[in-house]
Every structure is written in C-alpha cells, then in structure tokens.
Length: 551
Image 1 (cartoon, rainbow, N blue to C red):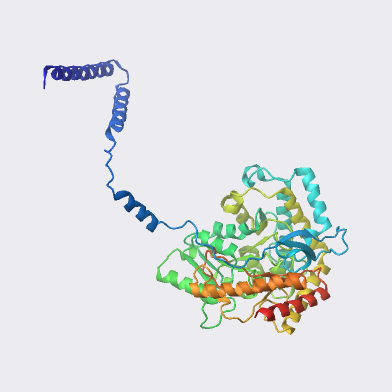
Image 2 (cartoon, one colour; image 1 turned 90 degrees about the vertical axis):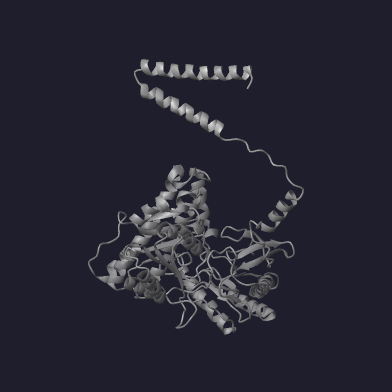
C-alpha cells in the first residue's frame, strides 16, 4: 500500500466517523430518537439490497452448447393444442328461415334455405333445429324484440352485478319464477295436504346470458372439492364442464339403463359406492357435505326421458339434492310446457305429499332459452337462497356480460305464449313425436329415443360406432373406426340435403370433452309442432334409403 492509498483509506474512515457523529448528534437533539434509528436502518437495508446482488460474470458458450440446448428444446417441447383430427364436416350455411311473415309461397316455418360450396343454394325442410315450437320464427317474437330494441337498444352495459341489470332481465326472472312457482303450487294443492305454498319470498329464478354456461355454472357454484355429485354417463359437454370445474373428489357417473354387472353402476349403486368410500376414508363430516344428483329431463345425446319418480325416490332415500337440466323439456313436456316435473305430475306419479315437499325444498331446475323458447340464454329456478347464492358464486353470472335485453323479452314472450296459449300446439308436438317414432320403427330403424320426445336418435348396428370412454381416451384403431362411421353418417346427412330435400343432423363429439364418457354415433332428427304428416312420411322414406346405402 502506497502513501496515496493510505491517505484515501484514512479519509474514508474520517467520513464514516463524521457520519456517525452526525447521527449521534441528531439522536441527542431529536424528540423521537427511535424514528431516526428506524430511518437509518431502513436506509442501510436499501443500500444492502442495492449492492448485495452482483451481475454474474458472463460465461462464454462452448462451440457445442448452442446445438445441445436447441436439441433439448426441440425434443422436450409439447404442442399447445393436440393435433386436430381430420374428420368429415357438414359444410353448409343457413341463409334464410321461413316465417309467418314470409312473402315467398314456397317458404313456411319448417323450411330453410341453405348454401354450401359444393351443393349450391337450395330450400330444404328443416328437421335439425331444436326450436320445437318455432318461436324464433314467429311474428310475436319479432314484434317483442323490436319493441325492446326501440326502448333499450341492442346491448347492455356490463355484467349483471356491475351496471348490466336492467328492466327486461328482472322481468324475465320474475316471469320464470312465477311460472315455476305456479307449477309447484298446483302440485301442493293436488296433494290435499296442508303445506306451505311457494312465494316470491321463498323461491326465485336467476337468468344467465349463455345457455351452455347455465348448468355448468350452477354445478360449479354448489359443488366443491369435498362435495359429492353423480351424473348420467350420457351427460352433454355442459354438465361435464360443470363437474370438471367443481374439482369434486367424489364424482361418479351412473347409467340410467344399467343392468346388473354393467360397465356403469345404476344411480342407487353409484351413491352407495360413494358413501362406502366416505366410510372407509373415515370422513366424519360427510353428512355435512353437499350432495347432488344431476340429471337431464330429456337427454341431449340420446333423446331419452329421465325416470324422475325413481330419481326422486333414490334422492330421498340417501338425502341428496336433485338438479334437473330441463333444456330440452321446457316448452315440450307437460300440459303447459313446464317441463319434466309437470309431465310426471300430469300422469299422477308425483302425488305423494312427501315427494312434492321434497321437490319444493330440494330440487333445482335449469334450462336454456336456445331450444323451444327460440332465444339465447338460460335460467335456474330454486329456493331464493340458492338464487341469491348464485349471484355471488355463479361464474357465468359474475363474469359474463348480461344478455341483450331484447333476447330476454323474446324468451319471456315465448314462455308466456307456450304456457298460456299453446296447449293445442303442445299436443300436436307430442303427436308428431309419437308419429315419427312409429314410422321410423316401422321402417326397421333402431330408435333409441322415447316416443314422446321430439328429438330422435337413430343408431345403425355397425362395428366401431361406440367409444366406451369417449373420443379423448380412445386408442388409434378405435378412433379410426369411429371416425369412419362418423364419415358415413355425414354422407347420409349430405344425401338427405341434396337428394331428399331434408335437413337432419348427426351426433358430434370432441376430444375436448373433459370427462371420459361414452360416445355413440347416430343421426338426429328433430320434429316440431309445425311439421305435417306428409313431411314426416317423406323424411322417413329418404332417411331409410340413405342409411341403407351407407350401412
């Protein structure tokens, strides 16, 4: 160390000593010495943080480092999305719907005009839409929509809980609540037992802006990780999504058509299995867990009707709640189109006072507006506590923009028309459904749907038409055979459009479905209250020839 370095070191220590003396002087003269100490400590800590981290010395890459890292990246990376399967697509676009105010004499409420690149433009009889009452094409729905647009515009402001709720939303919820409460009160009155009736203070409805998100939001709102839920193995993607979002550790699929020794247990057996597992795991709080049975009134995949009295009997036996997705039953079943509960009540199968009390207190009903109501959105009806709970926990309610007000008005208008003015049309719809079923069976086609359901699913006994664990978990050979069957059904639909002049659909499944549930290929035919017997006869003849040509 030379003289200059020694001098610099002494000056450095002198500056530190001067700083120390300055701090001591401040502490002696200050009225709050602890404040000075804390400030000094904070300043010292900041300096320590700043000078503590050193930039590491950059290491020079060896010649082979870059190639090694690039090879590891290419070998270890996974695609963000799975490779898309090359399956047949029904490529057509509906460009015009027939309606009551149509000036073309060849257009009516069962006719649509479609166009496609290889088929051109043509008018066909529509047997694909689930608008069973053709409310979306009625003059009354159009007038109701135009009036609401004139008053409120075409859109709302935001989510329901954030400036998105306006008069049409509340009117729709009040109307749905009124319709469903009147149905339950009629059940209570028929029992002859003194029982509390439902009121707007005890039961209410909540409306969602998107039908698909309704049932999935309700399931995920009420079912959490430690709760119990059982669902049909033919559940659609919306129910699968709800079960998946709930993250329930006690979820189980059941088969409504299971036999002893079958692949999926019956409803009673599925619940017994979950309760036995809870006993083995010594879950002392299992009686406090929420437990739900999720069923569809009419199955979206099969067109079958749920055995609601049997479901309610099992639910009462095990003390479980019931969630009914009536998306394809509202506006279809029951004397006034109020769904599955009304359908079985009309048959006298829900006359037990204990069953009616259970329905009043422990059953929730969800449905979409996209089918018989001819609009967009969905709703859930239950106790008022359950409706209020969803306003804070229903994902589709909280995080979705509220529905355009005119869609709420159309849904309310359609519901009022069906429940108050359409008993004859409902009877015609059921008559057409039974007539179509009889004709299909007489033609030798295998119909898996129930006669009273307007949605018919026809399945041909062909190898590879069923994937027991769905598209997502199928192996390559099974998936290839399944795709071949789907391609055959796609050609059937194309033949029906080009040769027969009828628009029909087919069952479609995706590898994105979250649960490993069975996938079954088939053709879907949806009949409406506006179809004539001659149109149904022509459809059956064309469908029989198209299926025989492919299978």
